[in-house]
Image (cartoon, rainbow, N blue to C red; front, side, top):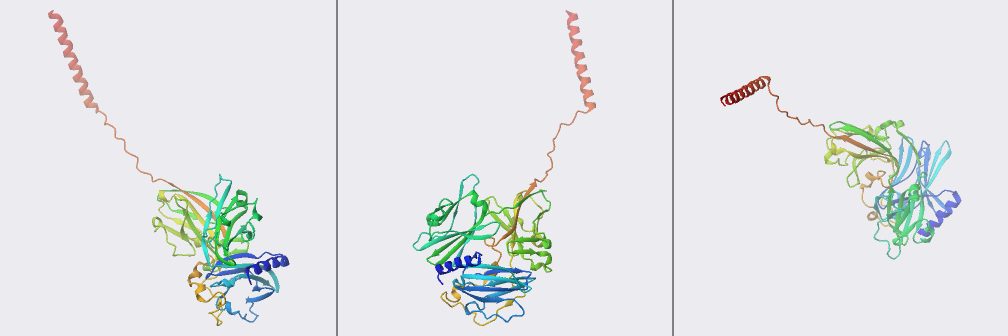
Length: 441
């Protein structure tokens, strides 16, 4: 199916079902999680091929195992973690691009349905934060691809609309840039967008895709710093500072667009479905990652080594022996984690055909390495942020001993009396001499 045919089918599906498929962007060789079912009996996942639905996963215990198509064998992983069900496709190839539907069932009734449009590109460009100038009328955002402007290359822009968390197509330079005239300004063959303040207020994430004809070359996520809570903490030199995040260890519950994440019901702390990142703002206004509750290998900055620790599954950051150089802004970011972990008990597909995916996309060389699993669900650029908070730490300077003021010692009483007697004697001699001198004359 060509990209044009896929687009036409997506439009037809939207008109028929009244539901817009959610675009999902992933690079070749990585993994994608196709939705979740919370508190349900079982989950069905389909790959939509034209007018036919191809069943690729059925988590029901009473149903026979699903026979996977050859191109997916060895790459499907199912999760059954404390009433949370999910499905993952690993080692993505370009041929995985297309429509997928997830149905959640409980007590014999379908309670939810979600359709996703998976777009697999050759590579992903590093995410960037959109810097908004409050004094300017508009803000420029740039899709960082050197391929833009070449023959046959087009750009698609998507935006993530809040608070519904729905990703919608904003423009396609292959179709026409006139469709967005008057709404936003487009420059450099679609590589640059000029957004006004009102548009940034309602849109926090933007995605650009670069195509060569019908082949996706790269994609990139650009995001505005999300609204957050702010706190102030005051400390004195040498004290221990505790910074708290709303994650609150094992007692937190979040209502998210994809369901409720509730750590109260998680008996195993290792099964928490969130991670907490701690950052600090550097003098260059860049955010430096100093702690990651989901990755102990993140290096602690040299000036904080031996003084930094986490509690409550990352919800509390402790800085010991605080000093004036520690003063500044610290951020905690609570991210939606992943239910796919190496140390959990999952159902793995063990069917033959792991060399699958040898269609038009090629074999193992197209897939990439084996180290992508450690990054799944933990990319701040692509995953949903559940909560964000900044704390400004003010440190009073170290109290030094005030300088001693040395005063001249007071004259003793005895020395004063001796000086007075000498002065009186000298005065008397002078007067007596004057009297004798006058008498002789």
